[in-house]
Image 1 (spheres, rainbow, N blue to C red):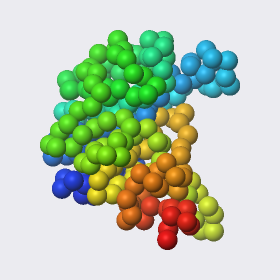
Image 2: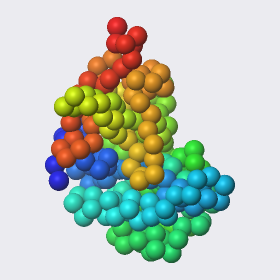
Image 3: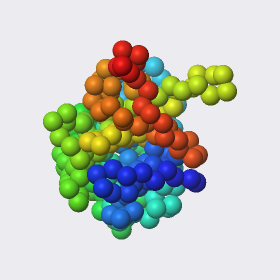
Length: 226
């Protein structure tokens, strides 16, 4: 599996085709917005019925990234569970799959807006964590720099062989890095929307998921492009 190395805040990171972020110098793997238990939450709230397989599919992908990078630390960057009740209602198969992934390494659950409280699956639960001067949080703080966040589920639309395709993507500029959603049942927010075009500095790049990932200037609405 190919990765795309890039520099942020003076450090070398690797964008993985899955949407995971590897930081080799720190022995770290970071993923955002797993939204485990989404099918259960939607059924509980009377929404559309979805096949209840997203948890195992997401964790199988995470297992591949962990096997490839052998991280000392894993950071789940918020909204790891679709809500607090979903965390407590994980099916037995999904709960048992988490154990081997967490074993023998530091595992940090960053609090998200969907899962603000501690859950009973182990690991460390924090609002933010800072490593080598870089802060990991769920939602970007426009007043901060040197931060890595998630929340927005960024995606970019590109033209390929005469077709318009939408891909999940990382967004990176000289101040912040925003991760794509990692979970199976997660939508996305186009990076030309004001929430993201206003957040990211001119010159920001989008790193589109794929094997290999591909970097290009972050697409913006025409009025933002100047």
